[in-house]
Every structure is written in C-alpha cells, then in structure tokens.
Length: 279
Image (cartoon, rainbow, N blue to C red; front, side):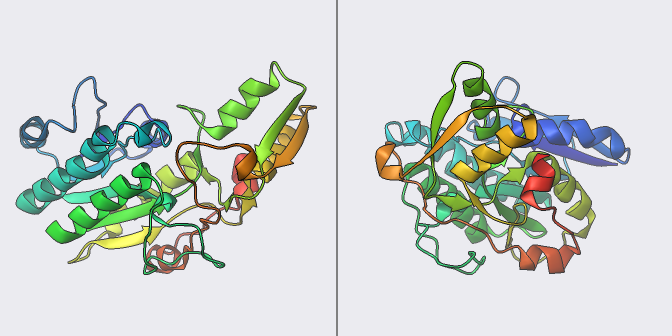
C-alpha cells in the first residue's frame, strides 16, 4: 500500500486529488492542511511522515497571495522555499517520492515562445522568487524519484481563482474590465490532478526533474473571462485593458506560456485544450 501525503489538501489541486482518490484503491491518501500539519514546522512534518509510513509526498501547499507577498516576504519564503527544502531532505533521507508543484511566475515573461524547462528563470515578484528558491533547494538536495511540475493559471470548483471571481463579479455588475496584455494558459486543476495520479507509478529518476504542465493553447485574461461568460451564457460587457491601467503591488509576467513537450513525451499523456476543459 502506498501511503501518500497530500499537503494543501483543501486547496484547488488538493481538493481535486481528494475527489479522485476513490478511483485509486491501491493508494492510501492522507490529506492535510495548516490545521492538522503546519509545513513550516519542520520537525512535526518529519514526525508525521515517520508515524504514517509515508511513501509519497505530493506538495500542493503554497503561499499564493501574489500581491500580499510583496509586503510580507518572510511568510511565502517559509512556505514556498524552506518547507520545500525540508520535504526534499525528508524525501532523500527516507527514500520517498516527492512531487512538488511550482509556477510559471518563476519566469519574467519576456519570451516570445513557450518556456522550456531549461529556460533561465527570472522571477519578478516575491511570490515567484520564493517558488524558485523552493525549486533550487529541492534540486540541490536532489532526492531520487522526485519531480517539480510548473503549472499556470490554475482554476477549479474549489478555492479562490479567476473563474470563480469572474462569476461572482457577474452577479452584481453589468460591465467589467479585464487585462488583455498578459498571455498564458489556463489550467484545470482536475486535469492536473488526473495527470499527477496517472504518472505517479512512472516517476523513476536519479536526479530531480522539472516538467511543465498546463492545458493546451493560450489566451489573455480577457479571452479567459470572455470564454467563461460565453460558456455560462452570461450577458456582461467585458472591456479589454492594459496592465498599466490595473496596477498591482506585484509584477506579473506578460507572457508565461509553458512548453509541455517533455511531459507529454516522458509520460505519454494527452493534454486537453484549455477551452474544452473550461466547458
């Protein structure tokens, strides 16, 4: 029996993994969040892993308040960096598989083609920097049979995300403005969760490998919003604006499309088109 620790169990991805758990009877899932396992308490995490005979860690936990991170950098550093380093050390010491979820925000967004895993990261925000620091720590410790999956623009039925924000705004407004000069790929947390559980038995590597996963295709946040309203049949005026018209504390990458070729070839996974999954 594989005992799988899933951190961030009540977040978007963790909740989708929970929904799928019954389809994998050979796996014993232990879903945790900050209420029953504080991942910044390193000794407690190690004890939890030992007591529960954990074979696999899927780290979905993250500090994702991108703008708020600019004013309290020590908190995202503890969660996105130092906790990941601790997981990596435990994985190495205990010979445990570790799957860690990272982000497109490790890039600066100046590319003119989809980012490869080998492209040089250059985060422009505290959030992006702490996520990259977590990646670097994991790669330095280098636990075997462990991977990093970078993803982007994640949405789900659960948690807080762009999809749910748009639907909430549409309840009280006849018109909204959405940024049209940031380009990426919306990612269904359902698709990502299915992909993780599908590849789990196939993760066998001596050094930490990085993979990119998002839904196929690309769009702007404006395009994403328009698609949401069209699919739901909601009549609302959507205005396209530039990022400069909607200033935020944290800088976002203008182009953060991820190249998924390595993931698709390695694991023979077909990735759905973003609008198909959105529907």
